[in-house]
Length: 435
Length: 75
Image 1 (cartoon, each protein chain N blue to C red):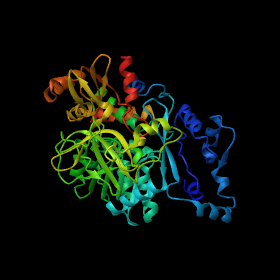
Image 2 (cartoon, rainbow over the protein chains, first blue to last red; image 1 turned 45 degrees about the horizontal axis):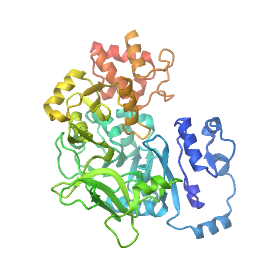
Image 3 (tube, helix red, strand yellow; image 1 turned 135 degrees about the vertical axis):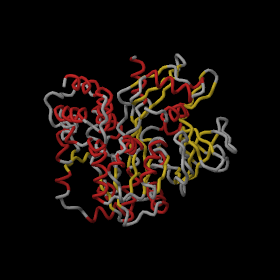
Image 4 (cartoon, rainbow over the protein chains, first blue to last red; image 1 turned 60 degrees about the horizontal axis):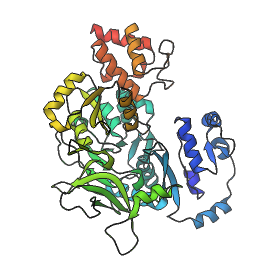
């Protein structure tokens, strides 16, 4: 990664473990000039049927660099050049490559370092893979400040006691994980067994952090700072954040807070006007964190990177996140749902996220997810936990308004997650159709 | 043992649980598998596997998992 950047190029990190079809789709879109592999993954790469353009890392580091050429290239580099392309799974199943510039990462990292006082004493315990936008936060704040970063082996996340032992052993004081990783620790009541002595900053993003499990962490490590970060890959990683400053009931959801530095958020209603006092609307972002667009995809880019409808005077691009938000009475942003996640059911506008949040709080539910079957107008609830279906249905009747009641409840041995640790809703739809 | 095998096969089909004794070391089971296996075993055998027993040594093979179930059933 760093070698590619130093030589004035941009990169995409590929996961050798992801399905062959996905890797091929990405490579077809990228048409990379070079593919760098290590000896360990060389065979795997050859199996993909890519013939040329291979460079083996172990050979490359032995070779001589040409100082003169590098200097020439570096003198021509500018901050708005692309730095990397990060592929996300588009809703259609075809990966979309988000192009991020040096400027976006520099501005973003500066915000991370200033806001969370990251310095050379910071010791990160990294959970998120490098092909996931969250890794930008710990990796580049480390590079900028001379902090320390440990890549926690993935297997530790299966064995929570070992995970906490590792944190203690490496004296890790800062973590930035997906909620599902924090949930594993909480669900097994790991901190009853072993204390995490060094943790000071506990940050999370990528999904909604359930308050039940957050409270478990906060009860066990009361002195740490807890931060809920929010944002899509298209704003480098994050656009808003909330430092937890009060106690939340298990049924309340966490605010997403306020905009970061050099990153402004506006809420725009369906009619293209600005939402006022507590009105709902789509979260739109402007500023230096924004991606340049999608790689070789002008149509998709034009759909969401648009002229600010509130500015008629000069060109100004904003990114439409597709997330529905509003301000609460305290002036904090509240996440409601995805635009395509807000449903009309029996005449009511319903946030599936609200149902999920409520059901998650039912005793015996460890994780749940909702989808909407448009054809048959059914709310479908999937859950994972140790109660049977009828118990969940009974319990949900007590806490959910009648029109929010799921019309179909499916118990799963496990809720499917995608490679980034997010609930795999495409897969849930398939499971539902198969029932 | 049969019962356990059935539970495992339901959680993660397509794994050779009978013969493989490196399920963890070879990364055949991922974090979400372990979570599901623990939940499924707890339910099936009416036991409570707690964090201190969720260590790789107890999950590398079906024999190890069976030993853990037996140990917890006795307790």
